Image: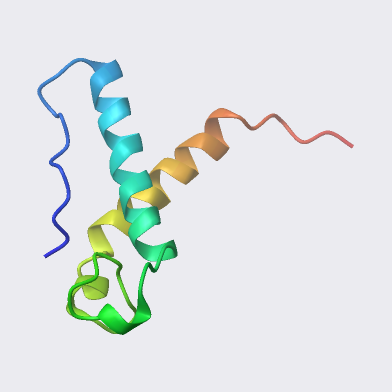
Length: 80
């Protein structure tokens, strides 16, 4: 289980954006930061090929969607 805070879907837009940003940051920290390699079973880190790593599909889809939206929103027409 990823043990992440649920998104604030019923709150206002600003709270939802903050909730999504915190969720992405929490997932990133659990992937990137390994505190103690000897404590593999008790660590909150997410390691490759584990059950938790397999549960990241929804998080990856969310990040992929948001990245596309940012690229579209910040793009401009290509001119030669």
